[in-house]
Image (cartoon, rainbow, N blue to C red; front, side, top):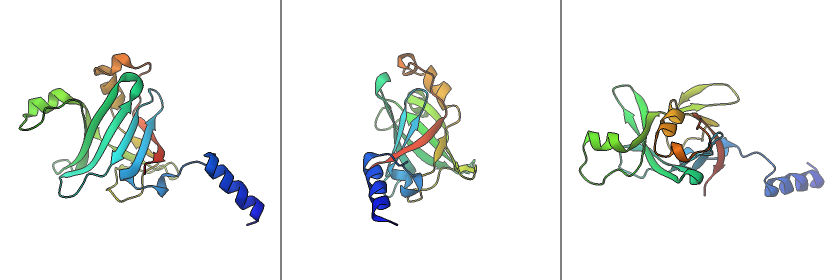
Length: 165
């Protein structure tokens, strides 16, 4: 590789002109963006000794949305199930308490743009997928308290945006 080409690639990378590649990021540091309403999904490490396989936050500053969520493995359906929760009570809570503060519940699917393969959300430590599909997410958010403040109805597809430090 010539020095001039190397310098051009370095300059483009510094300027942010090259695309961010999901495979360069582990899932627990990945940030995804939903195109219609501008919602971002930020993953964070879940920690040790917890039944939670993933922790995430959903952010839409224009709608005042800052919702925490987690993913738990459901042995009955043999799938990881995600829950986005808003202002849930702390301590000893009932199923109806959790239902009242649940904004969205469902399975997060991971899609690979290159192969078209769709599978389940990978475990922490694995490469971040290119795309996430959250079936029913858009209508659930539109019907929630956040929906009225949004200028567009959210979709169900989130694309990889960046890797957080």
